[in-house]
Image 1 (cartoon, rainbow, N blue to C red):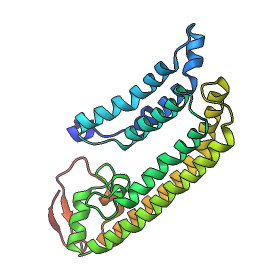
Image 2 (spheres, rainbow, N blue to C red; image 1 turned 120 degrees about the horizontal axis):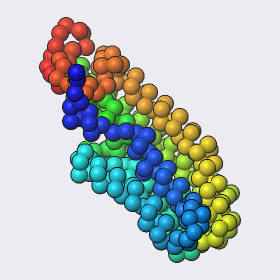
Image 3 (spheres, one colour; image 1 turned 180 degrees about the vertical axis):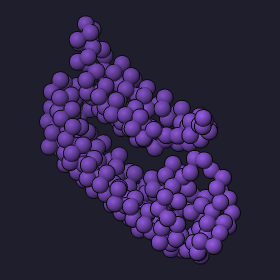
Image 4 (cartoon, rainbow, N blue to C red; image 1 turned 90 degrees about the vertical axis):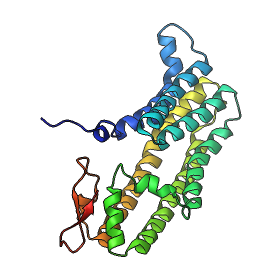
Length: 257
């Protein structure tokens, strides 16, 4: 009977990642007071905010200390919930919600562009990482085919597309917030409008953004395949590890990963 190696045991579950860092904290922020009322007590806004922040904070710390990596979704969830909760907690002007909704994707879009020419471009965190690809095998094949400059151009084009999708999301986020949020912060009507805005954002923003992300990811797949000559299945991370790497001509193994 086969056993899981340490890499398999620590493999990221993308649905759990999304649920604990984004969805569950958002639901707590929207429904926390209502749940408390049904249970017979009135939870203060600071308590609801604190409970919502626990999930991305704990998940991010787990990833940092156990998986030895920085979790982008934990950072995004923590910052987003902290700002949204802070607007309601301190009863700031409702227009800050629209600014916040636009600022988060805009910051990430600008960060993707700003890091594109650095040693650690953010686009590789999203599109070219060991959670998806067998990076060592691909880098070996690129070097063997002298295709590294072509790969750099592929990553740069992908950077522009990904940054454009973030900036487009920022514009849609701002418009959606201005359309739905009319009541003052700290009121029940404000929380209800915030809930409706969050629900509609999945259809108006999240689905198109995921479609763009899927298109960019597919362009990376096909681009790497053309540059390396590797079959599509061979580019994915092999948890078993240790297999020989075939060169693009298929003449035999050129090394191990």
